[in-house]
Image (cartoon, rainbow, N blue to C red; front, side, top):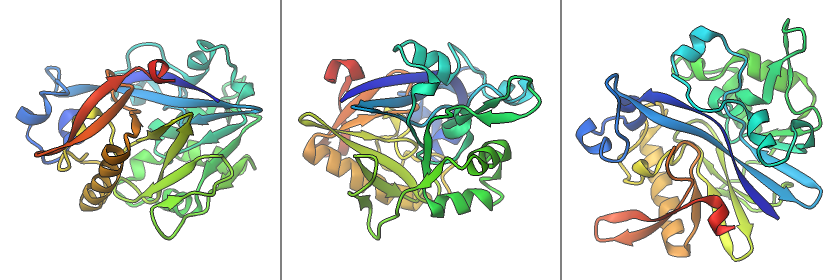
Length: 285
């Protein structure tokens, strides 16, 4: 098995929205803001090369939205999943599986692209199965007013109608340890309904893809919860469970949205769980 960090682009989000009720004087120590209160954010995905399977976990926001749409997010750096894959010698047609932690546009938008004539949309990864779960898909197709802007119709319609979508079984507890993808999945409901976090066994290591449960290393403290989360108290509980697992068992936490830290470990202290070390993925694999 080989693992690759796939950076599909960087953008900016409002620091207050990213940290909810936490004062700027605290969150700006780890995530400094510009003059418009915007902080740098990554769209870092994970590629798993495992025998005859090439599994892409999330795929960024894509390049098909309007200039007005992108102007809200102040994108910077190289953009697009296809270019990011090519840096590691892969093509989009090589992908066998696209695992979507959830269907917010910055996690699934790269899975849909313009067709050649730019008159409509098509699936980006024509040879891949797209993985979600029924509960989250139903949630996305009938969104609440708070999340509606994150579930873009052009993404959902194409993925659902493609015939390439598959569903992961949602367990009664947190973890499904019997999935068709070869890794466990930790299910969480604080950010959105039934977000899925892959837990990957690699040699003697456990790597957990944190998605939006822990967007950056600056969110380790339990109250540091995004204003985007639909159930912040549930997020607090879920973070407590997973961060303690990570500290107890030395999990490596892969961060999707942190522009500086690709992978971190955490430790228990008298003040709670805190950052232990930071790594580049290729330094631990």
